[in-house]
Amino acid sequence: MDEVYHVSDPRTLKAVAHPLRVRLLGALRNDGPATATELAARLGESSGATSYHLRQLARFGFTEEDPTPRDRRERRWRARHRYTSWSNAELSTTPEGREAAAFMRHRQLEVMTTSIDTFHREHDTWSNAWIEAAGMSDHVARLTPASVMALYERVTALIAEMEEHDEAAIDAEQVHVYMGAYPRHPESSR
Image (cartoon, rainbow, N blue to C red; front, side, top):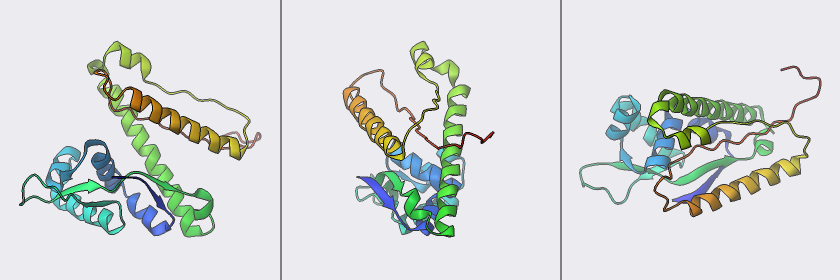
């Protein structure tokens, strides 16, 4: 699996931002290859819907058939990339690009909210160590755009370092780490 798929076409970004496609791609990235039927059962959808949306994801370069199926009769799908990226500045040059980027940011917020809600719903199944470690924080800082980009790069590198460090740890789990930084005008009240 390649590391990053950089999207520059607004239609491609909008295509992946479909709610079910975001969930399908996330499931393939997090849990590995699966059939449309397996994904349908996991996500509470029909296999017809998951099959259609997997083909659409493949059409736009996000998924592909797994070349090593467990059984010749099954059609397994896998993600082609670990992450999707795009340039907000690049996409903001057209109304379609701005719309696609905004659409995707809203999908990201929905995924984050679902992740947090799932953790709270399953609270009693987690150890005290995980309950203490889980959470969110927010900071308001005065930074330049270059510093924000450097912050993203450093945090991403630190995540990779910690992931490598914890690779064999018996108490390691998949962890959703979200980053976001948006400027605000001092006079903005919302």
